[in-house]
Image (cartoon, rainbow, N blue to C red; front, side):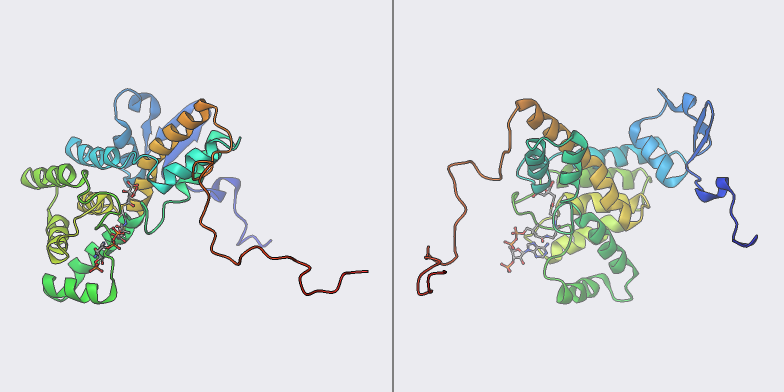
Length: 266
Ligand SMILES: CC(C)(COP(=O)(O)OP(=O)(O)OC[C@H]1O[C@@H](n2cnc3c(N)ncnc32)[C@H](O)[C@@H]1OP(=O)(O)O)[C@@H](O)C(=O)NCCC(=O)NCCSC(=O)C[C@@](O)(CC(=O)O)C(=O)O
């Protein structure tokens, strides 16, 4: 190792998030003793992710998005998977990880794509209706819209109402709200879903698209944990995806004899 590429132990991990010394924990420069009991969990999330404390109005909007996505019952594949895992004798952390790992582009992770779409539409040189038309030529399903279960996602209206209020109060600009509503208008009657509505909030608050997914996962982890815990407490063992008397539809060949038409083996 040459002197040039030698690094000291303190340079190996570099972080601007937290200062740890014996007897000292400081988040973004604030001693933890001052933060405990003083700031809310959403404020702590914002502080770590963004570097500064949010205003109370910003924290309220972030909190609303986090609360809205917290749970969607065992109909949500991520919750069902966590509950199944919890009956298999794995630890609670493994059950939670199983659920979290199902959050992808189609289920629960569409917020990131929705935010990228809203940004692309904002940055397009085309007038908004034309930009949406162009986007639709390449994407059959627009992220953040439609729901396999709810004709109208009950989380949409209260979230968008809060954004509209925040626009009126000058907390956020409203540019992403306008774009998302225009998209919704273009693909009517398919309404915005939780991922779309929270993408509007995260975009209005200035988070990058990747964090829309990260924050959904953070919020949904609470529901996943609670479901895994509930299932574990029930004492159920090896619970499968369908009740025991029900069988998966078999679509392969009919039963056949391995020895039919074959010479008996010596
Ligand atoms: C979600 C779903 C697959 C549903 O499909 P569906 O099966 O109902 O739709 P289909 O029957 O295929 O479509 C019927 C007609 O509407 C048209 N149509 C539908 N969606 C359209 C759309 N986005 N853009 C344009 N057009 C659309 C379609 O083109 C067709 O038109 P046509 O061909 O003319 O007949 C679909 O929307 C979709 O991919 N969305 C984008 C991805 C997305 O945002 N994912 C997040 C969903 S939230 C979530 O994951 C969190 C969750 O809520 C989960 C939970 O637990 O469920 C939780 O909290 O955990």
